[in-house]
Structure formats: structure tokens, C-alpha cells
Image 1 (tube, rainbow, N blue to C red):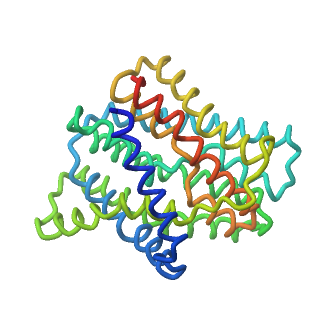
Image 2 (cartoon, rainbow, N blue to C red):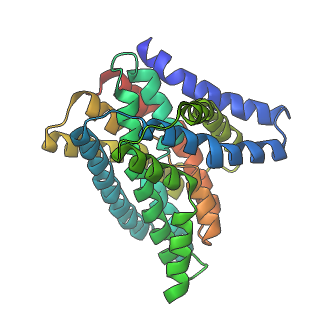
Length: 310
């Protein structure tokens, strides 16, 4: 029951998002609006609110963040190797590699951590949110580099640098994470009126994010068993947490830190990977299929981690 109570709310809300679209309750315009609201307002408010006011152990945050980044880098390398073995075309390589490592941590991982661990470890929400901040910056940085190198919309020289900087500076979650870390590091306390405003907006982020995932999932033309989408998804939700587990053991990390790490690593591929793949002229349909397949498969490792991890 513990596993069901921790995971099922997340997946039920995702299913609800899909049903609301299929029944016509959510129009295309409404879905687009909810996605924009979540991406530009609700999630940044949550990240800023939690990070700016969090009380946390710097050592724990540093360990989780570094392990997340190290494991993801290894997954990207495995993705490159798998792509070469599959002889994927240049246009598909960026979407494939990104799909192997970029996790949907803000939309899926954070809700699961809160539902699964917050009752047992009161400080886990602050720890998980602060550790996620630098990781979000890394995910966006690495994805843009990969897609700039392998997308059809080739940018060279100053143009490439300009595109790179623009994508980083305009990312609302990066802005929220950086602002939250700065406010926290200087010890500034937000006036109550603003703190409550950000907190109220942030409370809407997790259900809205999960509804967005459900509304964006499409199961038409799901690839066959030996497809690149399945291989990328297997690397993402099975191989990546296994890599993280080995790194954590070598580092001597266990308990709550290990569970946070493994839940983040076992999350499906981030929905933003489709948007970026399309933006940079990579294989957006492949990116979309990876998101769908990894979302379905992620229920298996997430269930195991919640039940036995740490």
C-alpha cells in the first residue's frame, strides 16, 4: 500500500490529464494555456519559494546534485554509443541522446518524492528541491549543447553562442533556481506578502504539471519493440538509476539521499526534450515517442525504488 499511495496519485493525475483531453473537456487552446502557465509561472514559483526559504545541509545537497550530474553524463555517453550502434541519422542523434539522460524531475520526480518521503523525513522537500536547482541548469545546458551539435538548424560561431545564451537566460526554471539560491545564500527573508504569493502559486505547480504530462501524451504510432525510442527509454529509466546506485555506493551514500537520487534518475524523459528537439531541428517525433515509452516504463523502477531503495 505504501508504494501505491506514493505513486498512484502521480500516475492517476497523468491519466486524468489524458482523459480530459480525450473527452474534449480540455481543448487544444486550454492545454496550451495550462502548459504555459505551469512552465512560466507555477513551477518557477514553486522552485523559487522552496529554494529561497529552505533550510538544508549543504553537504547533502552537493552530493545529490553531483551524483545526478555524473550519472546523467554517463547516460549521455551510453546514448551516443547506442546511437552509433543503431546507425541513427544525424538528425535523430540529438533527440535520442537527450532522451537517454534528461529526466522529468520537476514534473514527476518532485511530486513522487513529496508523496513518498515527506511524511517520514520532514526536511526532504527542501533537500530535494534545492538539489534539483543546479541539476535543472545542467539539464538545459547539456541539452542545448547536444541539440546545437546535432540538429538540422545548424548555428555556427557567434550565432551558436547567441542561441545558447538566449535559451539559458530565458528559461524560467533556471531563473527561478538561480534567484532562489541567491536569496537563500544571502540570508534574505521575503516579506510575508510575497512569500505567501509564491507559495500559493507553487502549490498549483505539481497537479498542473502532471495534468500537462497526461494531456501531451500520444500513443499513436508507438514504435515496435526494437525501436530507438524503446532503447533510449530503457537506458533512461533502468540503466540510469542503476548507474546512480553504483555511484552512490562508491560515495558511501544511503538512506534519504539515495532514495531522492534514484527517484530523480528513474523518472521518464522530460517533456521539454520534445520542445527543444523541435526548436533545434532534431527528430521531434522520436523525442515524443521516447517521452511516451519512458513514462509508461518508469512505473516499474519507481515502484521498486519507493518500496526498497535506500
